Amino acid sequence: EGINVMLGALTHIAYVHDLQCRLITASTWKNNFNRNCTSLDGLYKQYKMTSVHCPKPIHEFDSALIGVYAIYDLFSKRKPFEGFDICSFVEMFYANGKL
Image (cartoon, rainbow, N blue to C red):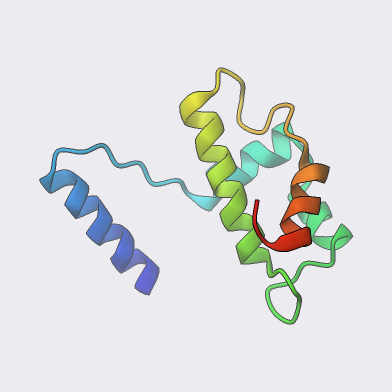
């Protein structure tokens, strides 16, 4: 799969340049979201997100939330997604596609 090759290339570049590299699996951030915020599957249904044939596919939403997870994980003393305002996040996500 193309994504795995890209991740491998990034990991190799980080290694060669003695940089830290941390890969976040889907289960890691999704479990944190479900535990500390709300049901991800419930949000998909509520906002009628699907993998295809919708203005904002699930993978775009998930990609944005991975970034939120990383910010919490790296820069916050709180648990990832703890106190996160998901309603405002979704509104901005749908309003203009840019957060």
